[in-house]
Image (cartoon, rainbow, N blue to C red; front, side):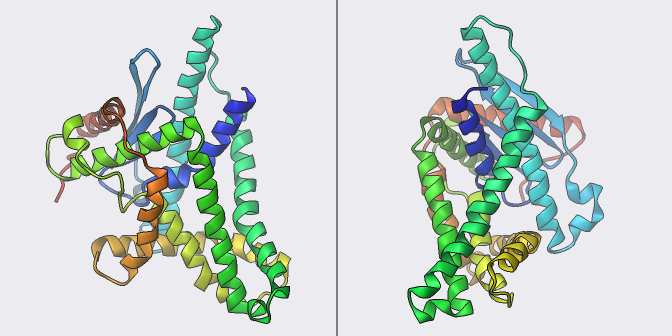
Length: 327
Protein backbone atom coordinates (compact mmCIF):
# COMPACT_ATOMS: atom_id res chain seq x y z
CA UNK A 1 0.00 0.00 0.00
CA UNK A 2 1.40 3.43 -0.96
CA UNK A 3 2.14 6.22 1.51
CA UNK A 4 -0.81 8.22 0.17
CA UNK A 5 -3.14 5.26 0.67
CA UNK A 6 -1.82 4.72 4.19
CA UNK A 7 -2.36 8.39 5.11
CA UNK A 8 -5.85 8.29 3.61
CA UNK A 9 -6.70 5.11 5.54
CA UNK A 10 -5.36 6.60 8.80
CA UNK A 11 -7.44 9.75 8.28
CA UNK A 12 -10.57 7.73 7.51
CA UNK A 13 -10.13 5.63 10.67
CA UNK A 14 -9.65 8.77 12.78
CA UNK A 15 -12.87 10.20 11.32
CA UNK A 16 -14.98 7.05 11.75
CA UNK A 17 -16.78 8.42 14.86
CA UNK A 18 -17.51 11.64 12.94
CA UNK A 19 -19.03 9.75 10.01
CA UNK A 20 -21.15 7.34 12.05
CA UNK A 21 -24.71 7.67 13.27
CA UNK A 22 -24.62 8.28 17.01
CA UNK A 23 -27.26 5.80 18.17
CA UNK A 24 -29.24 2.68 17.32
CA UNK A 25 -31.87 3.90 14.87
CA UNK A 26 -34.25 2.58 12.26
CA UNK A 27 -31.96 3.68 9.44
CA UNK A 28 -28.48 5.15 9.73
CA UNK A 29 -25.27 5.12 7.79
CA UNK A 30 -21.70 6.12 7.20
CA UNK A 31 -19.72 7.60 4.36
CA UNK A 32 -16.82 5.59 2.95
CA UNK A 33 -14.42 6.33 0.12
CA UNK A 34 -16.52 6.73 -3.04
CA UNK A 35 -19.55 5.25 -1.36
CA UNK A 36 -22.00 4.97 1.51
CA UNK A 37 -22.89 2.28 4.03
CA UNK A 38 -26.51 2.14 5.13
CA UNK A 39 -27.85 0.00 7.95
CA UNK A 40 -31.34 -1.06 8.96
CA UNK A 41 -32.10 -2.66 12.35
CA UNK A 42 -30.84 -6.11 11.31
CA UNK A 43 -28.92 -5.62 8.07
CA UNK A 44 -26.45 -3.37 6.34
CA UNK A 45 -25.32 -2.62 2.81
CA UNK A 46 -22.29 -0.70 1.61
CA UNK A 47 -22.36 0.63 -1.96
CA UNK A 48 -19.29 1.97 -3.77
CA UNK A 49 -19.12 3.50 -7.25
CA UNK A 50 -16.25 2.29 -9.40
CA UNK A 51 -14.53 4.71 -11.84
CA UNK A 52 -16.42 3.19 -14.75
CA UNK A 53 -19.74 4.11 -13.14
CA UNK A 54 -20.63 0.62 -11.88
CA UNK A 55 -21.99 0.42 -8.32
CA UNK A 56 -20.72 -2.58 -6.35
CA UNK A 57 -22.24 -3.62 -3.04
CA UNK A 58 -21.67 -5.80 -0.02
CA UNK A 59 -24.55 -6.62 2.28
CA UNK A 60 -24.98 -8.87 5.29
CA UNK A 61 -27.43 -9.52 8.14
CA UNK A 62 -26.61 -7.61 11.31
CA UNK A 63 -27.98 -8.17 14.80
CA UNK A 64 -28.12 -5.23 17.18
CA UNK A 65 -25.60 -5.62 19.97
CA UNK A 66 -28.35 -4.89 22.52
CA UNK A 67 -30.14 -8.02 21.29
CA UNK A 68 -27.14 -10.32 21.52
CA UNK A 69 -25.81 -8.89 24.80
CA UNK A 70 -28.59 -7.81 27.17
CA UNK A 71 -26.29 -5.59 29.26
CA UNK A 72 -26.17 -3.12 26.38
CA UNK A 73 -29.86 -2.39 26.85
CA UNK A 74 -29.06 -0.65 30.14
CA UNK A 75 -28.46 3.12 30.37
CA UNK A 76 -24.78 4.10 29.96
CA UNK A 77 -23.88 0.59 28.75
CA UNK A 78 -26.04 0.95 25.63
CA UNK A 79 -23.98 3.90 24.44
CA UNK A 80 -20.72 1.96 24.75
CA UNK A 81 -22.21 -1.05 22.95
CA UNK A 82 -23.69 1.04 20.16
CA UNK A 83 -20.43 2.89 19.50
CA UNK A 84 -18.43 -0.35 19.56
CA UNK A 85 -20.73 -1.97 17.00
CA UNK A 86 -20.77 1.16 14.85
CA UNK A 87 -16.97 1.30 14.79
CA UNK A 88 -16.71 -2.43 14.03
CA UNK A 89 -19.21 -2.15 11.19
CA UNK A 90 -17.52 1.03 9.98
CA UNK A 91 -14.21 -0.80 9.69
CA UNK A 92 -15.88 -3.52 7.60
CA UNK A 93 -17.36 -0.92 5.27
CA UNK A 94 -14.06 0.94 5.10
CA UNK A 95 -12.22 -2.26 4.22
CA UNK A 96 -14.70 -2.99 1.41
CA UNK A 97 -14.29 0.48 -0.09
CA UNK A 98 -10.49 0.25 0.25
CA UNK A 99 -10.50 -3.08 -1.60
CA UNK A 100 -12.48 -1.48 -4.43
CA UNK A 101 -9.95 1.35 -4.68
CA UNK A 102 -7.06 -1.15 -4.79
CA UNK A 103 -8.84 -3.15 -7.49
CA UNK A 104 -9.10 0.01 -9.58
CA UNK A 105 -5.38 0.65 -9.18
CA UNK A 106 -4.59 -2.96 -10.06
CA UNK A 107 -6.67 -2.77 -13.24
CA UNK A 108 -4.88 0.42 -14.31
CA UNK A 109 -1.52 -1.30 -13.73
CA UNK A 110 -2.77 -4.47 -15.50
CA UNK A 111 -1.94 -6.48 -12.40
CA UNK A 112 -3.96 -8.99 -10.36
CA UNK A 113 -6.04 -7.41 -7.61
CA UNK A 114 -5.15 -8.38 -4.05
CA UNK A 115 -7.60 -7.78 -1.18
CA UNK A 116 -6.38 -5.83 1.82
CA UNK A 117 -4.86 -8.31 4.31
CA UNK A 118 -5.81 -8.10 7.97
CA UNK A 119 -2.43 -6.73 9.04
CA UNK A 120 -2.71 -3.81 6.62
CA UNK A 121 -5.92 -2.73 8.35
CA UNK A 122 -4.68 -3.62 11.84
CA UNK A 123 -1.57 -1.45 11.50
CA UNK A 124 -3.32 1.86 10.75
CA UNK A 125 -6.05 0.95 13.27
CA UNK A 126 -3.57 0.50 16.13
CA UNK A 127 -1.69 3.61 15.06
CA UNK A 128 -4.97 5.54 14.94
CA UNK A 129 -5.91 4.43 18.45
CA UNK A 130 -2.50 5.53 19.73
CA UNK A 131 -2.84 8.83 17.85
CA UNK A 132 -6.31 9.34 19.36
CA UNK A 133 -4.95 8.95 22.89
CA UNK A 134 -2.02 11.27 22.18
CA UNK A 135 -4.11 13.93 20.39
CA UNK A 136 -7.09 14.02 22.73
CA UNK A 137 -5.69 12.88 26.08
CA UNK A 138 -1.95 13.47 26.36
CA UNK A 139 -1.56 16.73 24.42
CA UNK A 140 -4.49 18.61 26.06
CA UNK A 141 -3.33 17.63 29.56
CA UNK A 142 0.27 18.59 28.80
CA UNK A 143 -0.60 21.97 27.25
CA UNK A 144 -3.07 22.81 30.04
CA UNK A 145 -0.36 22.09 32.62
CA UNK A 146 2.11 24.27 30.73
CA UNK A 147 -0.36 27.16 30.81
CA UNK A 148 -0.36 27.13 34.63
CA UNK A 149 2.64 29.47 34.53
CA UNK A 150 0.87 32.00 32.28
CA UNK A 151 -1.65 33.19 34.88
CA UNK A 152 -2.51 32.02 38.43
CA UNK A 153 -6.16 31.60 37.44
CA UNK A 154 -5.22 28.90 34.93
CA UNK A 155 -3.56 26.90 37.71
CA UNK A 156 -6.91 26.24 39.40
CA UNK A 157 -8.24 22.70 38.96
CA UNK A 158 -11.54 23.62 37.30
CA UNK A 159 -10.03 26.38 35.14
CA UNK A 160 -7.30 23.98 34.00
CA UNK A 161 -9.93 21.38 33.08
CA UNK A 162 -11.85 23.96 31.04
CA UNK A 163 -8.68 25.00 29.21
CA UNK A 164 -7.92 21.33 28.58
CA UNK A 165 -11.40 20.86 27.12
CA UNK A 166 -11.04 23.89 24.85
CA UNK A 167 -7.69 22.55 23.60
CA UNK A 168 -9.26 19.13 22.96
CA UNK A 169 -12.13 20.61 20.94
CA UNK A 170 -9.72 22.86 19.02
CA UNK A 171 -7.60 19.83 18.06
CA UNK A 172 -10.72 18.03 16.79
CA UNK A 173 -11.94 21.00 14.75
CA UNK A 174 -8.44 21.63 13.39
CA UNK A 175 -7.98 18.00 12.38
CA UNK A 176 -11.38 17.84 10.68
CA UNK A 177 -10.73 21.12 8.84
CA UNK A 178 -7.30 19.96 7.62
CA UNK A 179 -8.84 16.66 6.50
CA UNK A 180 -11.46 18.58 4.51
CA UNK A 181 -8.65 20.18 2.47
CA UNK A 182 -7.64 16.75 1.14
CA UNK A 183 -9.33 15.99 -2.19
CA UNK A 184 -10.16 12.39 -1.23
CA UNK A 185 -11.62 13.41 2.14
CA UNK A 186 -13.69 16.19 0.60
CA UNK A 187 -15.23 13.56 -1.67
CA UNK A 188 -15.92 11.47 1.42
CA UNK A 189 -17.61 14.45 3.10
CA UNK A 190 -19.82 14.80 0.00
CA UNK A 191 -20.87 11.18 0.40
CA UNK A 192 -21.47 11.96 4.07
CA UNK A 193 -23.86 14.70 2.95
CA UNK A 194 -25.52 12.26 0.55
CA UNK A 195 -26.07 9.78 3.37
CA UNK A 196 -27.74 12.45 5.52
CA UNK A 197 -29.98 13.66 2.71
CA UNK A 198 -31.16 10.15 1.88
CA UNK A 199 -31.85 9.34 5.56
CA UNK A 200 -33.88 12.56 5.84
CA UNK A 201 -35.74 11.60 2.66
CA UNK A 202 -36.53 8.15 4.06
CA UNK A 203 -37.74 9.61 7.38
CA UNK A 204 -40.00 12.09 5.57
CA UNK A 205 -42.28 9.32 4.18
CA UNK A 206 -41.69 10.67 0.67
CA UNK A 207 -40.51 8.32 -2.11
CA UNK A 208 -36.73 7.99 -1.85
CA UNK A 209 -35.39 9.47 -5.07
CA UNK A 210 -32.39 11.57 -5.99
CA UNK A 211 -34.63 14.57 -6.67
CA UNK A 212 -36.41 14.28 -3.31
CA UNK A 213 -33.21 13.61 -1.35
CA UNK A 214 -31.48 16.69 -2.76
CA UNK A 215 -34.17 18.92 -1.24
CA UNK A 216 -33.05 18.07 2.31
CA UNK A 217 -30.21 19.53 4.35
CA UNK A 218 -26.91 17.74 4.94
CA UNK A 219 -26.99 18.56 8.68
CA UNK A 220 -28.48 15.67 10.67
CA UNK A 221 -28.86 15.74 14.49
CA UNK A 222 -28.00 12.03 14.88
CA UNK A 223 -24.67 12.37 13.10
CA UNK A 224 -21.57 11.02 14.80
CA UNK A 225 -20.15 14.54 14.57
CA UNK A 226 -22.71 15.70 17.12
CA UNK A 227 -22.00 12.66 19.27
CA UNK A 228 -18.26 13.39 19.27
CA UNK A 229 -18.71 17.06 20.11
CA UNK A 230 -21.00 16.18 23.03
CA UNK A 231 -18.30 13.81 24.25
CA UNK A 232 -15.69 16.57 24.07
CA UNK A 233 -17.90 19.02 25.98
CA UNK A 234 -18.86 16.43 28.58
CA UNK A 235 -15.23 15.68 29.42
CA UNK A 236 -14.99 19.09 31.10
CA UNK A 237 -17.42 18.48 34.01
CA UNK A 238 -16.50 14.78 34.25
CA UNK A 239 -12.75 15.38 34.43
CA UNK A 240 -13.28 18.27 36.83
CA UNK A 241 -14.50 15.73 39.38
CA UNK A 242 -11.17 13.88 39.29
CA UNK A 243 -8.86 15.23 42.02
CA UNK A 244 -5.54 14.26 40.40
CA UNK A 245 -3.22 17.10 39.38
CA UNK A 246 -0.09 15.16 38.39
CA UNK A 247 0.10 14.65 34.63
CA UNK A 248 0.47 10.83 34.45
CA UNK A 249 -2.47 10.04 36.79
CA UNK A 250 -4.56 12.63 34.91
CA UNK A 251 -3.86 10.98 31.56
CA UNK A 252 -4.52 7.47 32.88
CA UNK A 253 -7.84 8.43 34.48
CA UNK A 254 -8.95 10.20 31.31
CA UNK A 255 -8.27 7.05 29.30
CA UNK A 256 -10.07 4.91 31.88
CA UNK A 257 -13.10 7.22 31.83
CA UNK A 258 -13.65 6.99 28.06
CA UNK A 259 -16.49 4.41 28.43
CA UNK A 260 -18.18 6.62 31.05
CA UNK A 261 -18.05 9.69 28.83
CA UNK A 262 -19.30 7.66 25.84
CA UNK A 263 -22.23 6.30 27.86
CA UNK A 264 -23.23 9.70 29.24
CA UNK A 265 -22.93 11.33 25.81
CA UNK A 266 -25.20 8.72 24.28
CA UNK A 267 -27.86 9.35 26.93
CA UNK A 268 -27.69 13.11 26.34
CA UNK A 269 -28.03 12.66 22.56
CA UNK A 270 -30.90 10.25 23.10
CA UNK A 271 -32.71 12.63 25.48
CA UNK A 272 -32.10 15.67 23.26
CA UNK A 273 -33.53 13.83 20.24
CA UNK A 274 -36.75 13.12 22.16
CA UNK A 275 -36.93 16.61 23.73
CA UNK A 276 -35.77 19.08 21.04
CA UNK A 277 -36.67 22.14 23.11
CA UNK A 278 -34.85 21.05 26.26
CA UNK A 279 -31.72 22.59 27.75
CA UNK A 280 -29.69 19.48 26.90
CA UNK A 281 -30.53 19.92 23.22
CA UNK A 282 -28.36 23.06 23.28
CA UNK A 283 -25.31 20.86 23.86
CA UNK A 284 -25.90 19.10 20.54
CA UNK A 285 -25.95 22.37 18.56
CA UNK A 286 -22.14 22.62 18.11
CA UNK A 287 -22.25 19.24 16.37
CA UNK A 288 -24.57 20.69 13.73
CA UNK A 289 -22.18 23.63 13.34
CA UNK A 290 -19.23 21.29 12.79
CA UNK A 291 -21.19 19.43 10.13
CA UNK A 292 -20.60 22.49 7.95
CA UNK A 293 -17.13 20.96 7.57
CA UNK A 294 -17.86 17.22 7.78
CA UNK A 295 -20.72 17.26 5.25
CA UNK A 296 -20.73 18.79 1.79
CA UNK A 297 -23.54 19.04 -0.81
CA UNK A 298 -23.39 15.86 -2.91
CA UNK A 299 -23.77 15.47 -6.64
CA UNK A 300 -26.76 13.52 -7.97
CA UNK A 301 -24.64 10.44 -8.69
CA UNK A 302 -23.41 10.45 -5.08
CA UNK A 303 -26.98 10.64 -3.78
CA UNK A 304 -27.81 7.73 -6.10
CA UNK A 305 -25.10 5.61 -4.43
CA UNK A 306 -26.56 6.37 -0.99
CA UNK A 307 -30.02 5.36 -2.23
CA UNK A 308 -28.57 2.16 -3.67
CA UNK A 309 -27.07 1.32 -0.27
CA UNK A 310 -30.36 2.08 1.50
CA UNK A 311 -32.33 -0.09 -0.92
CA UNK A 312 -29.88 -2.95 -0.42
CA UNK A 313 -30.16 -2.75 3.37
CA UNK A 314 -33.96 -2.52 3.21
CA UNK A 315 -34.25 -5.45 0.79
CA UNK A 316 -32.16 -7.65 3.10
CA UNK A 317 -34.15 -6.45 6.11
CA UNK A 318 -37.43 -7.37 4.47
CA UNK A 319 -36.03 -10.74 3.34
CA UNK A 320 -35.39 -11.51 6.99
CA UNK A 321 -38.98 -10.69 7.89
CA UNK A 322 -38.28 -7.19 9.20
CA UNK A 323 -40.62 -4.29 8.60
CA UNK A 324 -39.36 -0.74 8.29
CA UNK A 325 -42.03 1.67 9.44
CA UNK A 326 -41.48 5.30 10.43
CA UNK A 327 -43.77 6.37 13.29
